[in-house]
Amino acid sequence: MKPSFKQWSRLGVLVLGAALISGCNDKPSSAEPPQPRLVDAAQVKAANGASQVSLSGRLRAVERTVLSFEVGGEISAIHVDVGDAVEQGQVLASLNAERYQLVLNQAQASATEAQAALTEKQLDFDRLQELQGKGFVSKANLDAARAALDTAQSRLSSAQASVSIAERDVALTQLRAPFAGSISDRLAEPAQRISPNEPVLEAISERGGFEVYTHVPEAMVSKLERGSEQQVVIPALDNERRTAIIEHIGTRPESSNNYPLVLAVEGASNELRSGMTAQVLLSPARSAAAHQGTLLVPLTALVHGDNESVYVLRINPDNTLERVDIELIEPRVKLAEVRGSLMPGDKIVARGAEFVAPGQTVAILGQGPERFN
Image 1 (cartoon, rainbow, N blue to C red):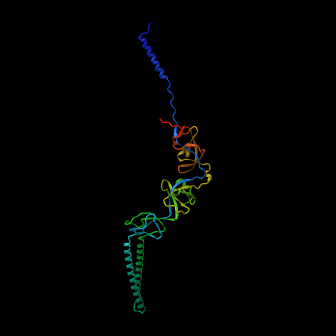
Image 2: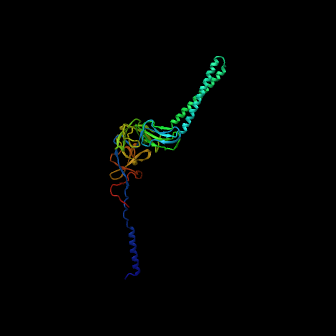
Image 3: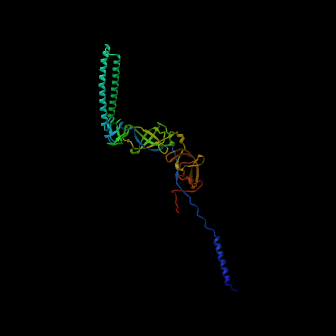
């Protein structure tokens, strides 16, 4: 007996259902493993004994001053310009002295008048003193003449003091060089009205030597000693190296917790100029033993953990990360001097170590093929 159409239909549904069930039971292909995270690596280096920090500074003349008039007025002339050589006592600038000359003339006239009055009172006193000796003048009249004479003397002294002050003011309308040197800056112009002690010129004397002005990080201030020898490199003079002595260490920070530092450059040189860039090589005053076995790592590689611990992440040969606790000996510029279970040549995570973890597999940036999605 042949199967009916209804039986064939049921059979087809069963076959289709079995196929669907078989497809649903198929296991999906295994997922692709996650790609290692890219990290920037740096090599651990030996510190090679005592540390040295490089700072940027500028040369300036030791003997320098800002020049100004002690009296105010209108500038009539400035006789020098920037770079001009000057001699001690040379007139550098002048004020309009007309007003001061009038005051001097008036003071001199008053002094002349006071001198004449004193002469007259002196003659009166001498005549009365002679008459009083003959009994023709009373003692009271003589005392009055003596008082008038004393008053005239005081008025003359006051007038003479006024003359001296006026003469001084006239002389101060001329600005003179306090020492032999050169003009480093011009801060005013003719016809400009200025007040007393307002800057007009800046002068320097290269015969007094040069010093380097720079700033030192707060972490190094306590490690520097006044009078200690350091090294200075002058790039403009083919990286000429000079010895410099620490003269002053600032007690107040100027910017970003950096303290001013002044070093006196030893040895005279006609090639040195104020304003030249100088590279200061500082060697902090610490014993060589304190630096034995120390290493250098990037400052950005340091990770600060709990309980003030500091560590780095070493990259093992299989590219897994290992935490290595270290002791921070001394921070430098972009580097840190450390001690710990590291060896020169070890690779560590140079930056961003906070975003990876010990045991994690990484890929070193710039090493091997890179995969892009």
